[in-house]
Length: 126
Image (cartoon, rainbow, N blue to C red; front, side, top):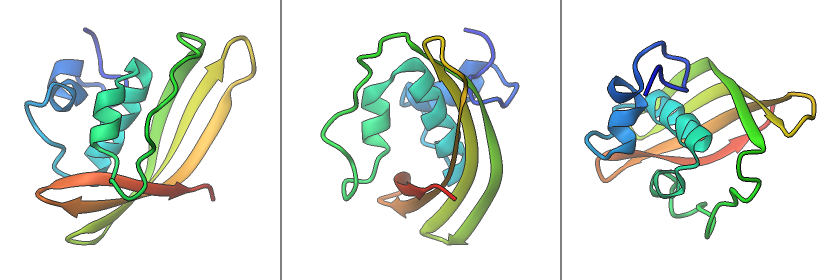
């Protein structure tokens, strides 16, 4: 596989691939955010569910548009370590569905560190 979908300019295996395979856990919330974006690109539902905090995790994800969503890129705007157990990542992800115009998803996401690993909790759209 070529470069990672998260925009790091690193090979996939040396970037998000190591997290997706379970070889390592992301060391901080920004790396988790990047790996979750890449997981959406690749429709890795198991990884997304495993990295979503149980308090806000949905029962399942719907990838039924099967190939209609084209992810165009991720930009990390800001990473803020609130304390040793909480962090925020502000990002912009761009995507298209079918032949429609590109959509810009701007979110400030909250993460928590529990049981030795980071989890996505929720996000707000500024």
